[in-house]
Image (cartoon, rainbow, N blue to C red; front, side):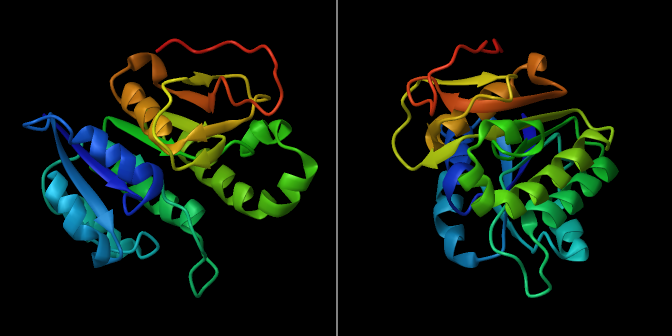
Amino acid sequence: MQNIFLAGSSRGVGREIAKLLLENEPPSVNLRVLLRNPTYAVELEALGAKVVFGDALNLAELETAMLEGNAIDVVITTMGGLPSDRGERADCEGNKNLIDLAVKAGVQKFILVSSIGSGNSVAALAPHVLLTLGAILKEKEKAEQHLVSSGLNYTIIRPGGLKSEVATGNAVLTEDPTVSGIIHRADVANLVCQCLRSDRANHKVFSAIDRNMLFNPVEFEKFAL
């Protein structure tokens, strides 16, 4: 069984990933999830996850939560959100701490869920969107760059605009950084789990979109996992 450490599971894509990883009975993975807020612990424990508490912006707390226990094979992170009192964002500093500890732990694979608009996919977004989200996207880009340069076996997935609805099954990955659109969080979780099982996703950066919900109907090449 794989030992997986998941950060960002309190809601959104991270919660959907936890559900998928633990849907088998018995589960095919040992899943440890990082939480700051104990409010979300009951549901995750009911799914079969081992909950550990800590703030990813606090390196000592994160190290205790992450490295005390079973060895970790895979780290998955969907972390983001509001800045701390010191102005630090989990999008960058929290994920960088996670990456550094993953190197220390010798994990086999690191999957980072980022966002379209980060890095070279900035070309996919309209100017008014960049005006609103530009600062956050820059933080996500820093985390991506830190991961790529870390020496870890990585996969970076950049979803488009997110909706909390049931999976459509029409979501795809592409290495084309100019494509953008809408995607459901449950579909992103499905793509993450596919990348978890595929060596073809190693050392790749993908955009994740629903092929039926593109902002502009353009031709692009789907990546086959």
